[in-house]
Length: 485
Image (cartoon, rainbow, N blue to C red; front, side, top):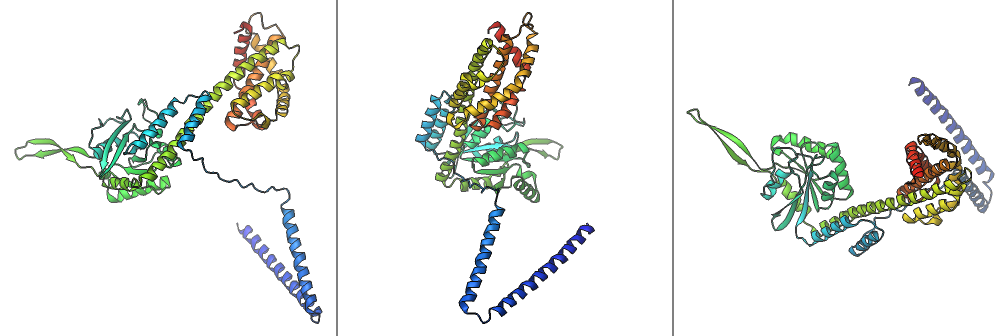
């Protein structure tokens, strides 16, 4: 450390001396010019100064240009807002999706649910949280309705709606199973979906935010849901403890969410001791503390128009995700069928082949046909894919792999009595089938993930397919070829 400090001091001293030297030289240069042109006309001095300035400017521009050689200007990517979809456009999208063979039943059901929510006067509020956080007990306190809650963790097994009113406004509380609850028959994903498709979310927590709960909150945040943090069991803690817990939760979430303390209405057992030694036990009601929560609910739901707008937006986002998944599922199924079909054609071509070689398969009719069929499924224009260059590249790749694949197939065929010693047709048929199956799966993966067939991604996906349980696949394909299944 001392050595580095010494070097810095020496460097600083040298820099100061150099700066002083150049300053003295420059000022001397200025004095010389002043003496030389002291008796010259004003226009000559002006011409001289303009010339010096122009030369200096050109020099600076040249230095900048040279420094930028070999670098490309950064492309400014306009952050385009997500498409705003109206009802008519959305129903048209559902129709187009249905025409492509996708299952739209769940999407249409959710769509009808949104339409019914719009017609309701009530504001929907989802209670969200971990198992045994006290959601059902809180609902009983807010609505006065029995929810069947018990001391056993994770009592809630179904999603139930409970209506209640605050002043003149109607609300509908949605009681859901706790997150990560086992054997409930309801997944975390469904619980999240219900929360996303509500006007408002009350996230009931019990002192701590777990890692899984934090991940769920990030999803709600991404969909722009208004969230209230309700920390349960307020009567268990002192004022100082409550303040510390609230600050810790706010730090964990790194968001300025409204945080309120609540305490569900309950009963407790008290004992009455008499002078004669008798002891009587009786249940007394303990009033819940939900005043702060009600105040925040009222403030967040005052502007119903904005609430409905945000609900529409989150609903559309959720439905678009469902639509993309449904379209992806049907595309994968169609792509799988195309790959199977062309694999069978490749096997047949392999049986008829005179000698080894993949040129006919990869650059000819089959390779072109499969690529075009897969591009059509994923709505990728074939002209945007350089088919000839891509297939030529794959051809070179397959030439290197063919010998290894044929050797593998030869070993596999030994498992079939009377076949292992046969060479030629069957071995080539299975090898071609494996190549086409691997190529088709690789293309499908690239089109599904990246909506294109970039060569480096395609090569990577192909290598992955060629090493994916190849021996077992060779055995199954050989069995199908031999027994013509």
